[in-house]
Image 1 (tube, rainbow, N blue to C red):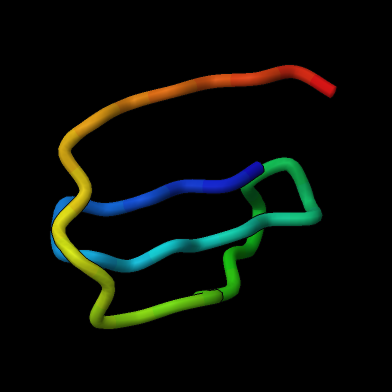
Image 2 (image 1 turned 45 degrees about the vertical axis):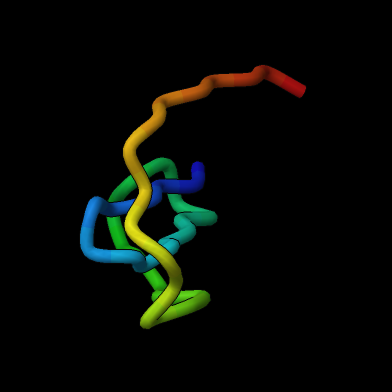
Amino acid sequence: LYLGTTSGEVWASRTGGASWTCLARHLPEIYSVEAAEL
């Protein structure tokens, strides 16, 4: 799972959402939502 926040952070979870790791901070603000299944 990947999650982008409106404050410019990108988070990832390899445990189905039980725990999260921040991949990036201080990116431009994120205002769109997109989903994909691989």
